[in-house]
Image (cartoon, rainbow, N blue to C red; front, side, top):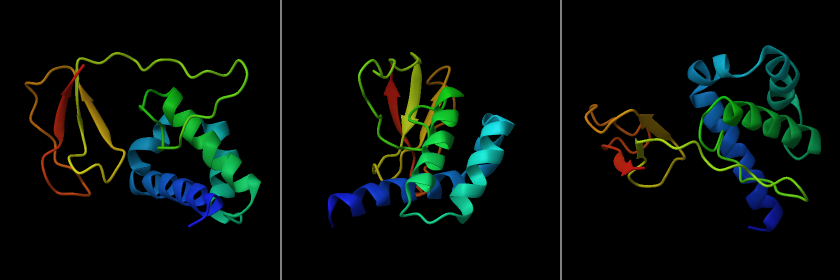
Length: 128
C-alpha cells in the first residue's frame, strides 16, 4: 500500500467514525460547516482534494468542540500552525485493543467502565 493509499485510508476511517457516531457528533458541528462539508463528503470523489478538505473541515469542527483528536485525522502542521496542547482531563478510557480512536473522558474514575463499541471489552482507564 503506497503513501497515497495509506492517507486515503486514514480519511476513509475518519468518515467511517463520523457515520458510526453521527448522532453524537452532528450536534457538535456548526450548521454552516455541516451544510457545506457533509454533502461533499457524502457525494464527492474520495480521491479528490475537495473531499479531503471537507473531511478535514468536519474533523476540525469536532476537535474544536472538545472531542480529542476529532475524527482521528493526524494533525497538519505548517509554519505558525502548531497544534495546541490537549485539554487536561482527570481520567478517561481508551479502546483496549487500539482498534479505534474512541476516547471517553469522565470527571473521575469512580464512574462505571464503558465498553468499547468495536472490541466489545471494557475500555482501558488512563489517569491524567
